[in-house]
Structure formats: structure tokens, C-alpha cells
Length: 341
Image (cartoon, one colour):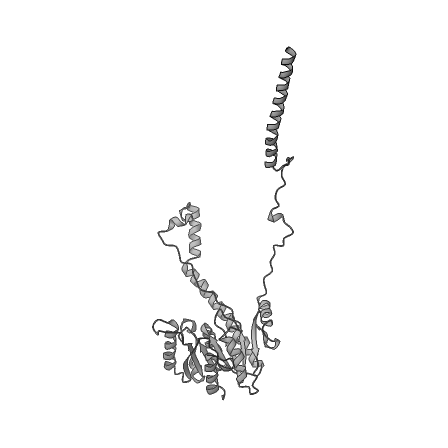
């Protein structure tokens, strides 16, 4: 009897042991799987930092903008059109096209508006390619874009809570005051004025270099066609080099602040065409139109006897032979006032 009881007890203990093993084994497997299935025997190796990565070259070459511009132009134009001119220690791109009529009448220097290029569509490019068919050599140049002149407005006086530095300790406040003083509106204005003046001087050097190029082609006096605010450059050019001057969509009055040092007397005997797009409407609300009227008044006061104003249609419509309203206006003016001089 005792042997039977002892045998049954051993059987129960054996079954209990194997049940315990069967329950515990899946738990151990799940824990091992969650930990990645491997046992860590030492500290993990650190991730390489960017500074330790010697395979990356952090040096960056300054892009050659002139070379990039020339590459773009080479893809679009024949080689004989492409020119690289020099003004001081800088180079710039230009597009040159000879008269194709066989009866050369002279040369035209095209100055694009700020932010535009020597092949700007519908304006510079139309004139550059159309007018050589009627006896005019054309040279269009790239100009340096002036600074935008935008300024960040100073914070309102009652908004110090939005600027945590203004609530810092004495040293931080002093540093903040110095920073604000350095970036005061008057200093920003002076910096912007200096940048604009520097940009204008560089562009005037480009205009002189372009006129030298034309003189090298036998053109001692040329016609300048200036778009937008490039009118100031044309008016400040040595006017002994001019046969005529054409302003297209100038937004400044004659003798405005940017033209204050211009002497208009030499222009009394030079044909001067002032063109404005017909899309400008409302003489008292449109700044361009108001300046257009002011230029007419100044021209009368200064005795500019060959000053002419016209409007052209800027709706993008092209006519026979690829011309548009702008090219027809300018071609007619040149034929009537310049070709025979």
C-alpha cells in the first residue's frame, strides 16, 4: 500500500515539473525575442559623428555664375551671338547680333530692367533679334541685380514678451541693445544705400565696357534702349557716346533722386523716346503713369526739343515677321529720327 502511494506521489511530482517547464518555456522565448534574440556581451559601439566621417568633403567651391550663364546661352544661341565682356575685375555675359539687312544703320545697346536678362522674352529678346533685320546691330548685356531694399520692420514697443532676450539679465540686455543699435533703421538704410550705389557703379562700368565693345566694331556713337530702372544708367552714361536714347517703362521721373546728378542739357539735341505700356491705367493711381506725365513736364521745362512720348500695346500679340507693338514703335522712331543722322 505504501509502495503504491509513493509511486503515485512521484508520478504527480513528475507531471507537475513538466507542466511547469511547458508553461515557462514560451515566456522565456518571447522575452529573448523582444530583446533582439542576442545577448549583449559588451558596450555598443557609438554611432559615427559627422565630424568623424572623413569620407565627406565639406568644402564647397564658389559657383562660377558667368560660366553657368554662358553654358545656358550656348544651348540656345549660335556661337557668334555669345560674348563675354569685362568691366574691371569682373566678367559678364552679352548677346551680339550683326545687321542682316546688308544696309547697316548703326548699333543699339539694350539694358534690361533689374531682375531681367539679356534675352528677356517679349521685350529685350524681341528687339535684339528683330531690329538686325532692319539695319541695326544689337548688343544686349546682363546687369548686376541691385539689392531688393526690403527691410524687416522693428518690433512693436508693447511686444517685449514675444522677445525673451529683452527680459534677460543686465548683460543680456546690454548685448541686446547693442544688437538693436547695430541693426537700427538708419544704419540699415545707410547699408542699403551703399549697396545700391556700389551696384550702380558696377553696372555703369558694364555699360562703359559695352560701349567700348561697340566702338571696337566701328560705332563711335550708339543708341541706348533702357528698360525700367535701368533708365538711370542710360542717363548717367557719357552722352557724347549717344545717338539717341529710348526709355521703356521707366518708373522714375526725370531728375528723380536716383537721377539727381544727371545733366539734361546734352540731351537737348539727342532724340529721346519715352515709351510706356498701355496696360498702365489711371494717371493718379498708377505710379508709372504719374512719372510718365512728370517726365513730359520736365522735358518741356528743360527744353528737350527732341523728346517724344508714346504708348505701346503689351498684350503679347505678335505681328508679321515676329514683331510686336514695342518693336514696331521703336523701329519707326529709329527710322524717322536716327537712321539719317
